[in-house]
Each structure stands twice: as structure tokens, then as C-alpha cells.
Image (cartoon, rainbow, N blue to C red; front, side):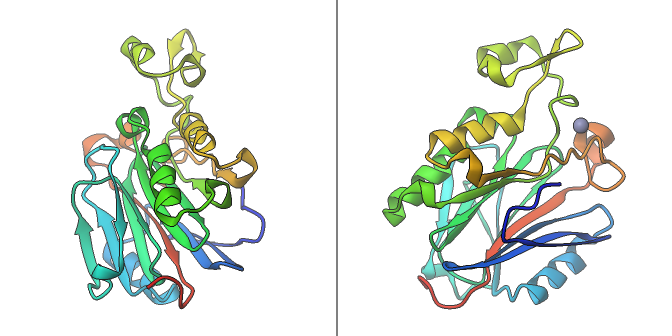
Length: 243
Ligand SMILES: [Zn+2]
């Protein structure tokens, strides 16, 4: 697993945490392993990262992006409807998504953080690109100041898709493996982040596949409908800032 420069990495049976302190505040992000019990896991993350509020989208495979602004800083935990990506400039606000093979994308820098849920539908609708564009426009900042991390998601070897995908995805992201098309979700999202203005050197791909590593992570393709979900999160842990 790749750890971006400047980050401290910690791992235990319940998950992985990456923490960094930079000129624009402290950022932490991580994800749960299958041994984690959701309620206990959330409590532990909130304590260790000094989280003031936990926000998650009601995921619907859309490309809609919502900013969690200072109007909601008094709420401790809530679900944001009508979106699959969240971003915030309010320190202490944790953003999370739940996945089991879909790709969680964390974006951070310039005093903001974002968390994106990108399955094939959201990827097709360009949700990662849209998130960077919305953030940089609202903040009037160069998207080149952001960094991004692509969390645990199904690898291209495990993600066989039907021939109809050739109509909606570029061939670059549909490698043929054993004669059949496979979708490279991570590569497609990295391309969107690059198109939005984040250079490749600022994008970390963890390359962890929940199906290949089903011993440690939940995978829909490995376990079917009953599969649990990986909780991925990001938070600006620093004080001050926008809110
Ligand atoms: Zn795999």
C-alpha cells in the first residue's frame, strides 16, 4: 500500500488511518476493515480525530456534490440527501461514504476536504471531476493545490463487465482480460481528477481490492447482497479556518 509523503500511517484489526499536518491544517483519512463494528468504529474515529460532526451522503450513484457549510455546524451527525459527494471547509467535520467494491475518493488541500462515492455509474457521470470543479470554483482556488487518494475498490482483474460498457467508457479503462472486458475504476477516476487539474504526482492510488483481500475488507462481488460495507472517511482536524 502506498502512503503519500508527509503522512503517518497506522493500522489495526479495525482499519487504517493516515494522518498529516501541513501548512493548511491537519488532514486525516481512513477506512474500516471487516472486523470493525460500525457504531464502535465511528465512536473511536470521532474520539481519536476530534470529530465534531459526522456527515454521510444518502448514496444513489448520482454525480451530485454538496458542500457542508457553516449553516450546519451545530449538528452532530446527519445524512445529506441527493448527493454522492460531500465537501467542506469546516474543521472538525468528518465526511464518510460506505462502499463494498465501489471506489471512495478523498480530496484535500487549500483548507478543504471532500469524500466521493464512485461506482461505475458515478464514474460514468464524472462525479470525481465534478467534485474538484465545484470545490475549486467555490473556493476560487487552483485545483492543482488539491491532493487525492483513491481508497479500497475492486481491481480491474476482478471487475468483469458486459459488452455494453464499451458504449459508455473509453477503451483505455476497459482492458480485456482473458478475452473479456474489465472496468478499471481507479484509472477512470484518476483520469477525471487529472482532467480537473490535479497532477498525477498528487494522486495516490492505494490499489487495495476488497475482492482480492476479502479476508480484510467487505466485497459485494465476493459476498453478494449480504456483504457489509467499508466505511471511508476524511476530516480536517485542524482548528480555525473557514467556519
Ligand atoms: Zn481484485
